[in-house]
Every structure is written in structure tokens, then in C-alpha cells.
Amino acid sequence: YFRILMIPVFSWMYLTASTREDVYRAAAVVFISSVTDLLDGWVARRFHMVTELGKFVDPLADKLTHGALALCLAMWALAALLAVKEGYMAVMGLILLKRGKKLDGAMWFGKVCTALLFVGMLVLFLWYGMPEAAANGLILFMMAVMAAALLMYVPVFRKMKKEA
Image (cartoon, rainbow, N blue to C red):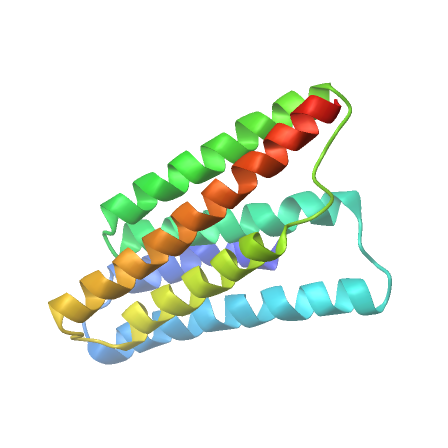
């Protein structure tokens, strides 16, 4: 819940930033949000506190954070790809849920995608004045990772659909 509450905070801080220091403050909030994601997952697994609600809210917080970051940074193509990927996963998840099946947590490639998106967007926040070619290259890399994760989820959902 903390990470979801931080979304309007860093969005407002970034969108109203007038100095480089203001941008760094917004990036610090994103960094804190990312660290709490790691700590939350570690605590839940370490102390056997994994819940069904947590399995839903944690990835939701990730997706909302990624979407807000992409929109703040005006990465429209990345935001569109994110919407396609998450839309596909949501629709397939609902179809399978109606059939009594569901993914039991994120797959390794989904976790890698999430981590790389957080790191990549944080780099874009922190490297104020990054050369345009480098920024575009980083955005294309993040999009390639996201597309690869989507393509890797397709056979997982197909197999689950056949089993249902």
C-alpha cells in the first residue's frame, strides 16, 4: 500500500520540479519505493507471510508505478507496450481464474522485467540531461525486455488454458 501511496507523491514532485535537485528528490522517492518492494518480498517469504492479497497488491503496485513513471517521463511507446502486456495478462488471468486456474506468483522473467524497468526508469530520472541517443537506447532496451517477458508468458497461459 505504501508504494501505491507514493505514486502521486513522486509524480507530483517530478512534474512540478524546477531544478535538478527537485528531480533528484523525486528520484529518491522512486528509489525508496523500489527498496520497499524488495524488502516487502523478502520479509513475506522469510517469515512465511505470503498472502493471496499480497500476491495481488504487490504486482499491482509495480504496474501502477511503472505506468506512472513512463507517463511522467513521457515515454509513450513504453507506456503503450506496458498497457498491452498488462492488459493481456489481466485478460488471460481473468479467463483462467474463471476456470479455476491462476499463476502462483510471478515467473522469473516477469521479475527480471520488473527489476530492469525500475532500474532503467530510475537511471532516466537520475541522469539529468542524458544524451538523447542514450535515453532512446535505454527505452528501447526496456521495451525489448518487456516484449520478451510478454512473449514468454504467452505459452505459460496457453498451457494453463489447455489444462483448465
